[in-house]
Amino acid sequence: MRVVVDHVSKTYTDRGGRSVDALRDVAFTVEAEEFVALLGPSGCGKSTLLNVIAGLLAPTRGGVWFDGARADGARGANARALSAMVFQEFALFPWRTAQKNIEFGLEEAGVPAAERATRARHYIELTGLAGFETRYPHQLSGGMRQRVGIARALAVEPAVLLMDEPFSALDAQTRQLMQEELLGIWDRTRKTILYVTHNIQEAVYMADRVIVLSRRPGEVLADVPIELERPRTEQMAGEPAFVQAAERIWGLIKAQAWAAIAE
Amino acid sequence: MTRLAVEDRTRFLIRRDHPWWRVLAVVGILVVWELFARIGWVPVLFLPSPIGVLREGADMIVSGEIAMHVAASLRRLVLGFAVGAALGISVGIAVGFFSIAEAVGTPVIAATFPIPKIALLPLLILWLGIGEASKVAVIALGVFFPMAINTYTGVRQADPLLVRAAVAFGARRWSVIRKVMLPSALPMIFAGLRLGAGTALLLLVAAEMIAVESGIGFLVLHAGNLMQTTKLMVGIVLLSLLGVLSHWSLNRLERVAISWRQDH
Ligand SMILES: Nc1ncnc2c1ncn2[C@@H]1O[C@H](COP(=O)(O)OP(=O)(O)O)[C@@H](O)[C@H]1O
Ligand SMILES: [Mg+2]
Image (spheres, rainbow over the protein chains, first blue to last red):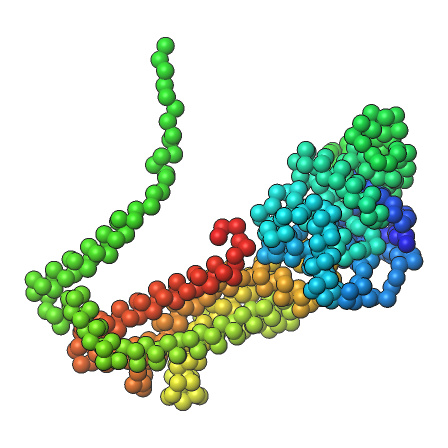
C-alpha cells in the first residue's frame, strides 16, 4: 500500500471573494511502512494537505490515491479505514471517557460492541493508557490526552496514520518522551505514518524521509532521506548524518523563515 | 533598618460562606411577620399570620384539597413542559444543523418569540376548547421558545474541530448530530429548561384562572374572590414550593447529564 499525492493544489476562497493559495502542485509518495515527515514553516499549508489526504477537504486541482489498498468499504468487525488523523489540539470528545473516545471510529464503522472493547483494550495497552480508561479528557494530562488521540486513530487500523503536529501543544519534556514512545509504537505496528511538524530536530529524529515544503503557497522544496539507523536514540542528535540532514533542511528554509518574519 | 511584613492584599475580596445568615434571614422574616400579625396593626384579612397559614395548610392536606389541586397543576405543568421542551429541542437542532431549516426558522421564531404567550390563551381556547388542551398548549408554547432558541445557540456553538474529528472518524449526519451537536448543546439546553420552568409556572397560574375547578391557580383566585386570605397564602406558598422543586430537580438532572464537565 502506498499513498500517492498527485499534484495537489488548493486555493481557499473566502466569502468576500478573496483567495489564498495554500498549496501549489504538491506531489510525493509515501511507501508502505514508511515514516515520512512533512516539514514547513507555519501557515505553509501542512494541515491543508493532511486534510486533503484524509478526505476532509477537496483539493482545487490534483488528487490523492491509495495504491493497493483494499477498497471493499467493509463495515463491521473487519472494518479498516484508509486514513486516520491525530490532531494538534487533540480534538477528543469531552463527554466521552478515554475508552469511549478510542472506540468512536469503531462505532461509526459498525464494529460490534464486544469487538470494539477488545480492539480498544489492545490499543490502550499499546499506548500506555492502562488504568486511565474511565477518565474524561479534562482529567488527563496533555501527554495522556494525545495518547488517547493516537489510540483512537490506531484503533480504526488505518492504512496510513496522519499526524498533524501531534506533540506541539505539549511541554518540551513530555514531547521528547512522546516522540520516543511513538517510535516504539511505530516499531511494533509498522504503520505508514505521515507526520507534520515545523520542528527540524523532530523531523530528522523520527522520519525515514523529510519532505520540505516552502512557505505559502506550499511547494515541495526537497525530499531529504535520513540515513540513520533504527531504533533511533537521543544520542544520534550528535551524529554527522543527523547534523548534516538538519543543516541541509535549515539551509532550505532559512531564507523562507526570514521572509515569513518580514511579512 | 525596619522590617515590613507582606500582607495578603486580596483579603477583602474573599467571599465566605455564611450558613447562619441564611437561616437567620428566613427565620427572621417569618418572626417579624408573625409579630406584625399578632400585634393586630394589620387586619388578618390583609396579612394572615405564618402560623395561621401553616394551620390552614395542614387542614387542607388532611381534607385532601391540596393533593387535588397540586395533582391537577402538576399534570398540566409536566405535560406542557414535556411537549414544549421536546418540540423546542427538535426544532432547535434542526434549525441549528440544516441550512434550509435555519433560513426558514430564524425569521419565524424572531417574529413570534416576542409575543407574550399569555395573549395567545384566548386564541388557543378558541382553537382547542376551554378544556385541558388549551392550558397544556399555552404552557408548551411558553417552554418551546426558550428551548428552541437555546438549543439552536448550543448547536451553533459546537466546536468545529470536534465536528471535523467526528467526520474524520467516519461519522455521518445523524452521528454528528447525536454524538457531537447534542452533547455540545447540553449546557445551553439546561439553561433553556430553567428559563422554561419559570415561564411554565407563570402560564400555569394564568391558565388556571380561566374556567377550571382545580389547580393552584384556581385555588388562589377562588380564595381571593371569597376573601379567604389565609387560603390564598397557602396557594402562594405551594407555588413557591413548586418553583423550588422544579429548580432542584433540574439541577439534579443536569448534574447527571453533564457529569463529564470540569466544573461539576
Ligand atoms: N478555511 C480557510 N479559509 C481560508 N484560508 C485558510 C483556511 N484554512 C487555512 N487557510 C490559510 O491557508 C494557509 C495554510 O494553512 P494551514 O494548512 O493551516 O497551514 P499550516 O498547517 O502549515 O500551518 C494559511 O495561510 C491559512 O491562513
Ligand atoms: Mg497546521
